[in-house]
Length: 275
Image (cartoon, rainbow, N blue to C red; front, side, top):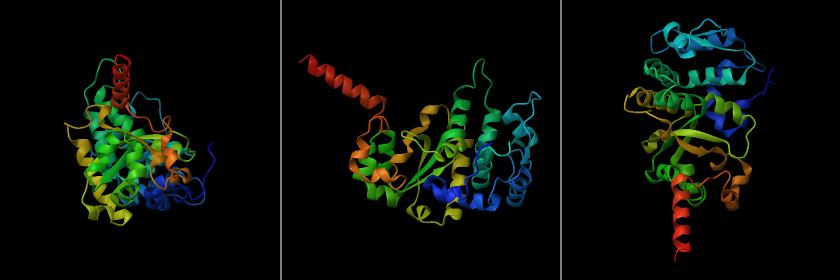
């Protein structure tokens, strides 16, 4: 059984947006399935098929995880599991987005082998997703371009004042309980009005939930994992003590330059060799 971590949502900056959900569902020890069900019922959480979300013991009856969720409203849940607890907390924080993700999963075409590109993208976001809001058009491009030191150090003030980072992937939340060098989320990037960034957390989550749900439901979106930009979490200002130093961002293991930048460097090196 996993060890309980009291006040976990207050301990790690990444988890602070889930604090409201954690307070409503967790006490000083592992919440039971019944207690979490009460929190879901009180919040009126439903699937996209209109069924109230119900927590059930995992069963080997041939139904797929996503099919069970959409067709029966049943979410498989193991007590004393951080992975499953964070899944419930994300449902509480982003009920529309989670329901839209499940509906898109359920509707995705079946492929001969594997999940296919749409389901791969949805699964990656469900497990490791981050939501990044920015009022500044330039900053998201630095994420897409793997320009980590420029983003997190050179423009540190712009990031702290003009970006918001919200957790979505429940496996990623679990990893944050024991953060490690190179821990990486896969993010959806949204340009938003500055006033949304200044909203209280609960009001902000409500607007973001609707925004992400609409994106996940769009058949032109989430067509492959390339849409989900990598994001080294410990580089975000204030998320670890070490990133207060400029040299922290020189770590190429954690802050990788990205495939395009690496190809450009190799091409430049080859040109120099032939000059």
